[in-house]
Length: 123
Image 1: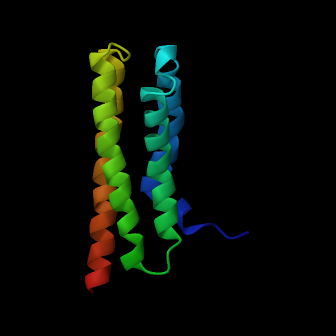
Image 2: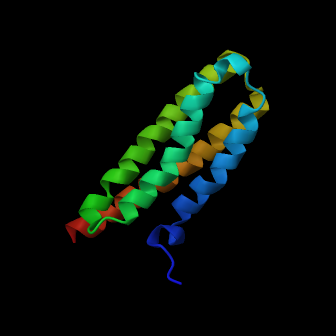
């Protein structure tokens, strides 16, 4: 059995671990947000890992590098969605702080992947 290339990437591994944490937090959100914030947060948190997978399966690093950029945009989207959730009192201060720390770590890892891919393209 061969391992898919994305499974070796720490940034993908972190993204996969993040999704269940997000879903757990969303349980406490108001039911009226099912098709609002909840669906947007679920979509964005899931797609950050999916974009890494999609890029890793591309035939060149030049193609690959586009997809972590998409993930980076989704991480920023999540930052805003969680900020809104905090302001609406759907998140506690401690949950917000915890999730933002994880997003910041993922953002740094995604930027590191982008920089590594860009460096390899230019060599």
